[in-house]
Amino acid sequence: MRKKYLLQSLLGLSLGAVLCVALARHTRIDGAMLHDLLQRFDPLYAGLCLLLSMAMLETGVRKWAYLDVHFDGHTLRPHRYYLRHYIWQNWLAQILPGTVALILGRALVTHAGGEKNWKRGLRSGLIDQLSELFVLLAFLPGTFWQLYTQGSFAFWLGQGLLTLLAATLLGHKILPRVILPAVIGWSFLRIAAITLRLVFGALVFALPVGSAAIAYATPLATLTALLPLTPGNLGLAEWGWTYALQLWQVDLTAAALYLLSFRLLAFALQSLLLLAIPALRAR
Image (cartoon, rainbow, N blue to C red; front, side):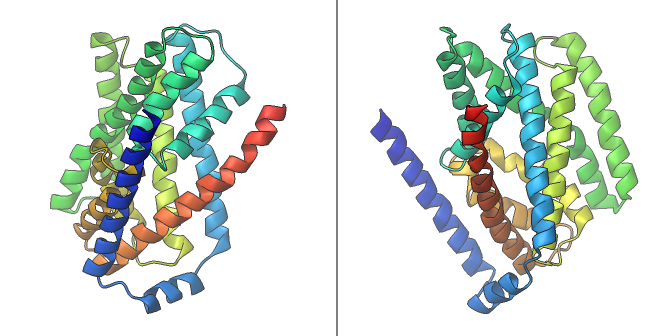
């Protein structure tokens, strides 16, 4: 069984790498562009991206802790317990499809914690993922509206927040065990941190990708996560984001360069956060 999952991961990584190389060739990225990219690296914005990565972890941990108590019926565990395992779940997403890594990782941690019915952890992870999809879908109508009318950012943001609030209240009445307002709230904060990290990711290398364009494209481009074919949606996310940004007049080569460089940056930040695990175990 382990060999089967290892083979699937290797095949997924290979497919993702091929897609990234194909994107670079398709958009005519060359060595000179990569050299120039490294020359423009800004450690200040990279540091801000690290802080936002930590914020993403914290919102995810808080959401998991809430689900663990109110959905799975467990006694609240120490914060470091959730944080330590959540860091590993995020790391698993580098070698497994992101949705699969979170759902299976949550189930395994639940089982290791003494819960015989590991499917409860599986359901918890599924609710976690659905809550983030719920938030993205609330902003999707505003994204299409802005694309075709060139409306203001304030209207886009206001429409998304109002839609999310109304949908949460209505959904909680219809499906009170699935649509949990507190979980939706943590999911919103996590997606806000993800979006801000994407914005600062463009500034790390001083790439001409507008902040508003990134915000508008986020609900649309992130839907590539619904196709869990490669680890961390490697390759699929880069292609999807590149052409989503082009809808807002972002240069195709600049968009591809931004997504490929951001992938490497995010991997480096995730690897850096792994260093915190020994300290969390020692406490």
